Image (cartoon, rainbow, N blue to C red; front, side, top):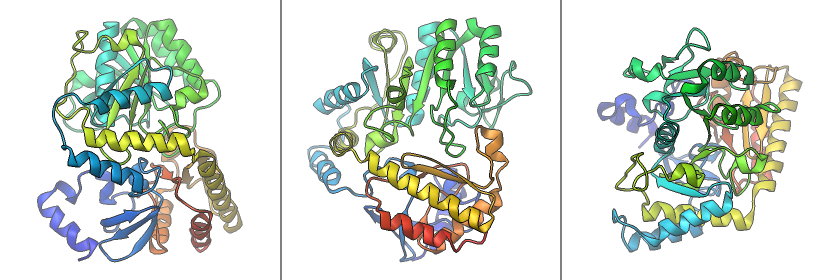
Length: 422
């Protein structure tokens, strides 16, 4: 049966037919694609077509689909029990591995998703500092909890407004929103409200308005400003963590936050999340401290078996140079073809991450990203899909090259892109 068939059935019993809005293809139009299986860099669809996947489940499949060693580990673990709601040695082993790979993290609490990790980190920051308000950045996505679904207000020094119905005014009143890469805006907020700010939270490399890197000095400036204000700095590395190296981006760039949230890759394709930080801050979590967090499935053995094996493979095989080389080949090729065709396009790339922004100028914040030609991106998406390539169905998302992609697949992508007319 076709994707169209399954989408129609889903719409009758699932709001919008999807369990996560971006899957609805609202940004690009058309009928969502339904996958049936995947192996390596290839996915099969319910329409009977084969696609080379450059979405990778939005990042976690850095080793490709159904890596044999990961699947075998998951099978063996599941055969011993899917979940216990009790302690297992895998929790201790996995936590030790994370802390070893990210030396600035003294301790880690394991949860079930990136959203839960961020929610817990914000609560921990408030409990630790005895303050209520936070600073976030336009275009940085940190999950769908109330405090994180806040858009910019009328001015930097006022609270934000909700970007979703159902979010209370009390939640938005406690959130300040600054433009990404605007250190002066953060400093201005801290100068006026520093005694009330519990945390500054940021994606160190933004991945939810397309790929946008921090400008020189931005992250270190945040580190210094937060420290001077007695505010915790939180790096949301749900996308960044283990993406550019077998560790956090904070460790790689030498800017050490107080708390780090992780997800996606550290689960190897299964739901997972983690909050890590200094012992002084992490000791405030229950049962040691007054900040409550609990979860029946936190520490799920199947998810952690998958994650542990994935991190071990990334550590031992180190596919990062290969992904960087392929990423550069992809971005350079896209830009050369765009220039030859006279397309308004700039391709951002870092490691195995890339975003074709449909404007010539570099993109440094949300306003720049919103100024891109989203209709052109939709045409690009469907063109590549028709030629056998699956990319994120939104111009505000990042495409991912895995450690299993090949030069041939990159060149095939570029050959197909060469036929794109804009």
